[in-house]
Length: 199
Image (tube, rainbow, N blue to C red; front, side):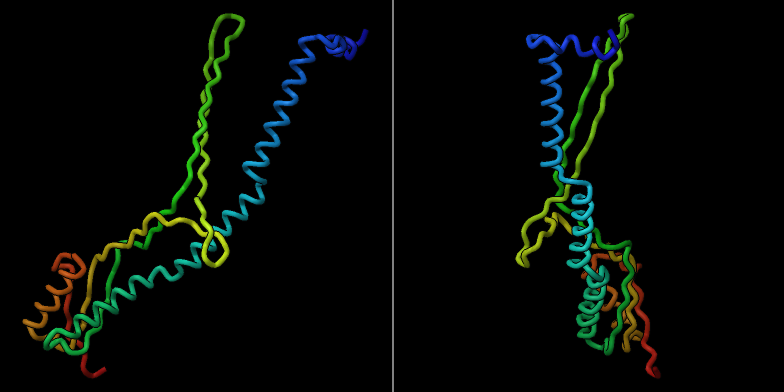
């Protein structure tokens, strides 16, 4: 009797508990395999989903400096209205760049396996897995786009104002105070200079 016969012998009996266990494990394995393919998709699908998400974010928020330029332009318009300021140019410096926080679905799986060896010793194995997926919604353009929870705009660190009336101490003070009030920066971070009239 060969090793194959000794292996198959317990399964030949139709009432054998070994056969029932083997069939149960086979069915369970097949069900897990099908479920994982259904719920998680293939690796290629996940990678293409991530690539599409990056393109969507880039498309919606191109030119992170748009915010900065728009802020400079608006401040320049307001400061030019101050009596005696004349023509005004503004330059802002920022602490960093804009940050976009997206809605995510986080699934945490934790499992613990306790093994007991023949000598009575025990070993405990713990595993923790996080699955993070960005939540997408149907857009009005027909595609999918992420849900943006919050946009964090960079903080203004310093301001340079070049004005025609920058040599007048009262105009200089008015420009500095207005800028400090509008942007919420300390007045020592604002510099007002006179514009070169021969440019």
